Amino acid sequence: MLKNLRFLLFILPAIVFAQVGIGITSPDASSILDVTSSTRGVLLPRMTTAQMNSIVAPVKGLTIFNSETNSYYYNDGTVWVELAGAVKRDNYKLVKSVADLSDELAAGGGTQYLLNTNFLYEINGIIPINFPINLNGAYVEGVDSGSDILVNASGGSLFNGSGGGSIRNLTISGGNRQVFDMTGGVLIVNNTIFSGASSLGTLTGLNLVFFNVSQYVGNTTGFTVSGIESFFMSNTFWTDTNQGTFMTLTGAFDNLQMANGRIVADAGETGLNVSSNPTIVNSGLLSGLSFVGAGTLVNGYTAANTFPGYNFSIKWDVNCEGIPVETDGNASANFYSTSGLTTGFTQSISNGTAVEIQGNGAFAAQNLFRFTASGGDNRLTYTGRKGRNFQLTASLSVRVTGAADNFYAFLLAKNGTVITESNAVVLIASDTQIQNVSIASVVNLEANDYIEVFVRRLTGGGNDNLIVFSENVSIK
Image (cartoon, rainbow, N blue to C red):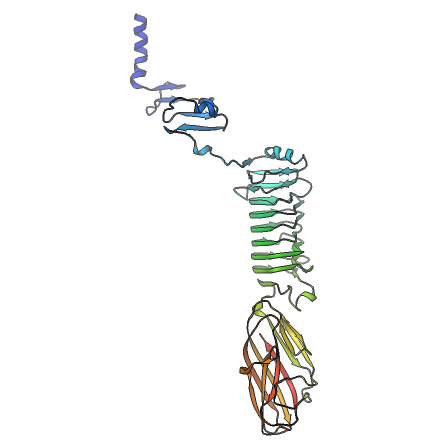
């Protein structure tokens, strides 16, 4: 009896104060249970999902560890709720070492890492990769491109395959090896640094390629890109630490656009190589890029596909610092008479119908951009793709014999039809008078429209003799 009384007196304070300490003699005053240890933790009940769901009438706040999902659950009084910090993507893998990709290496037959389609692989730290990665439609990303790094230690290309994929927020360290050898799918690259590669490699036959915010440092040479349906690059920085050619384009592209950034080509290097005349089905656009350096900024299309002094075909719109502007908006041309200034050339005028000024003259066309010259080089044909208004000016020095006191009109013609508003009228005073004639007009030209200079006798009859000492026409 006495012993029982002593035990009751011993536990009564704990019941009164409802405070327990484990591993500590003086529990914190704010706690009902103070568990203290530097070598052990608290282990909550571990159970399967089925066992968790079989708990009868779980009280609100009841907490367990689910051994199937590897996460904690608490009961909110109605249902079991997974703790928010433990919620994970179903298609996710954190990669802290190459060992985390052992399943993917097995799936790739031991010769490549075959990633899971639509999986997100988060790279955490510096990861040497000793076999090629087949992206296979997966997402590979880091959090900080300065510290999350894939190092190519494979002996070959780092990324291969035809399934495409996505790369973002990473540094790709080339290890003096090639980065890409991809042949299909969709490739999206965001906020990525490429360094130390022997070559950035090849992209061939992909449906879509999109690079956004990419920097290139210390690479031996750049990309060879061929036969891409839609190819887009923005905010591209090819620095002076690189060598070789930044990008070589071959084959056919439905759409191609490169915008903003800087491409440095030092002596012996090339910025953009289009010398194989890649086909642009719809449109090619270069805008906002700054091309600098003492090297070849653009190795352009061959002469048969472009204009002297320019680099691209008419399917391109180019407006970049450091290289010629090439858009329909700056199309221009001019021609002039090469007949002697003191003798000129002659043409017989026999009726009042407007006719082209041609006679026995000889002409030369120059400064052609998106215009061609034909018909003796005094017909200028617009070859741009977009219709626009052009300013046309012409000047002539002429004399007419056998037409004293008669009026003549000099005017422009579009596609063989005179442009009435361009009429410049002169009075022929005598056979010896030399007239200086100026013509100016604004004319809308669509693709393949052409311009010529016409003359028309307004009064008089019989045969007159037109002598043209000089003729100059400019379109811009």
